[in-house]
Length: 164
Image (tube, rainbow, N blue to C red; front, side):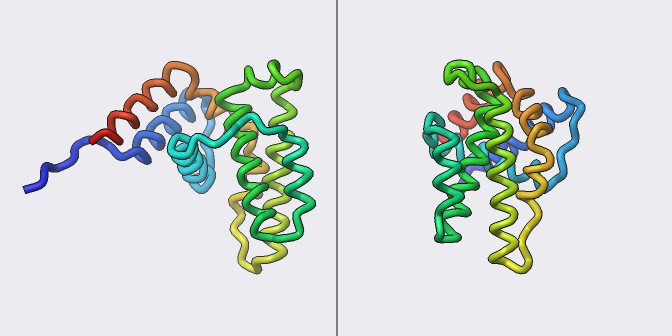
């Protein structure tokens, strides 16, 4: 007989952390945005994407890409990266001689453009990217509520979860 797992899933750990950070920051994100952020955090911890690429160049290349699926993927990656940098790693801005507003503006632009592209190619486009554009600063504040000790504890729990 297989043992019953009593540990929470990775998603449950991230949802709990986001809910705690929302309470700490007195912010209530829309459920769709909350779910998107949880999935983004899970992707980030699983894939460890490169966060150091130049933002402005990547935004320009994404916007100039003629292939809609590639454009959408690049814009989503850029928006997600800007959320992570502005919320979890704001100190990286000063190391690059830019302000956190640089990440915020680039991320908002990426999500707004992504929403426009998605609406153009899909008649029933989801509004999640418009919501991310509009709630970008609030999401950044929620992510900042995860820092610093809380994030380390969550990653430790996820690491021990993956070992089982």
